[in-house]
Image 1 (cartoon, rainbow, N blue to C red):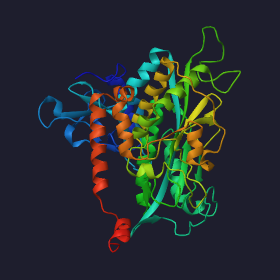
Image 2 (image 1 turned 90 degrees about the horizontal axis):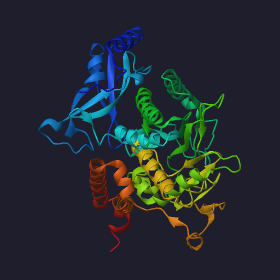
Image 3 (image 1 turned 30 degrees about the vertical axis):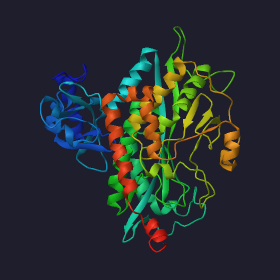
Image 4 (image 1 turned 90 degrees about the vertical axis):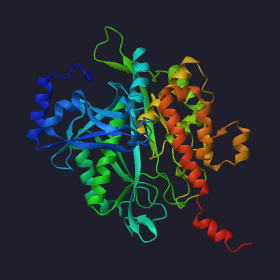
Length: 459
């Protein structure tokens, strides 16, 4: 098999092995991400570090969601090949270091590996001399299991408007501190934690980074939070909408495009392609956003990939007065009611929810943005209205489109969108649509308590 990088030499492997051993590491967590955005992998003894970094460690391909790999033959085996720069000892799992893996099949980069898919789209940017930076903002719930299902872990978290609540936040201080401290020790730049707008809901932010690193960081955050929550007797949840009468969890993307500065420039290594001295966004920035809006329906399937996602993407009243989730395809300066909130030199993509796969969401968004640039799409006028207070008739009057209102509708849009399907690749797009169609069918056949209560004795 081919080596994953020219930088992998016996000397570099030995240096890393010695550093990890000095940190008390005895096992490597070879981790990759499946189509659903869930961390998968296995533990490998530290003395197998060179194998992990060169050939990779093997997995039964068809046992992994979204691979579409056969049960027999040379392509039945999926190899997770470690990325040497990603190795980090995990403070919440003493003795274990996480190593991010790329997927390989038959010695070649696997076309349906989410991380490889993102790398392909970032390579398209690199061909133009650009790089993408993202800041991903994960919202999440801390829950506890009960006989009736799940409830907020803190029984006293009951304010009608709980955003920034400094009464309940300290009650989760131990968990939140361990989470932030562990991530910081792994190299993430954590800069704020707050109580969000629903009971039991929080947000932890770490600074933006190059897009691939940012997605890796998001996966590390999820792994840490799951483990620490269990240690505290809680359930960490990135379900988009656990409670019908409260806001759901988004995973907003702050997006900016950068390129090398002109030759001879002193003191600046890069400059923001989206920035413009005379206005908030450059022409390229506006075209990129126009592409994101043009492909909004197909992107919705990737960024809001569950049945439950579409219970978040509705405009209506909640206990706090708003849902904070977009339903309308619009953009506006610092407008949190629009699909895209524009800012100086960057934009915030507000559709993604907490269940989105960060690699696939980023890759699809890049493809949409590049299509907007290549076709020189016009962004159109900005929306400064509070879209949450407008009636549907007023929305239609303004010519503003509505996002898909179900997973099924979003999948229909994805199937029709050649640009986004091409970015995902034939294997992944087919597997994604197949799995999500099955999810939708299972949901439509489920008889809920609401149906029983409404219809059982009605006729």
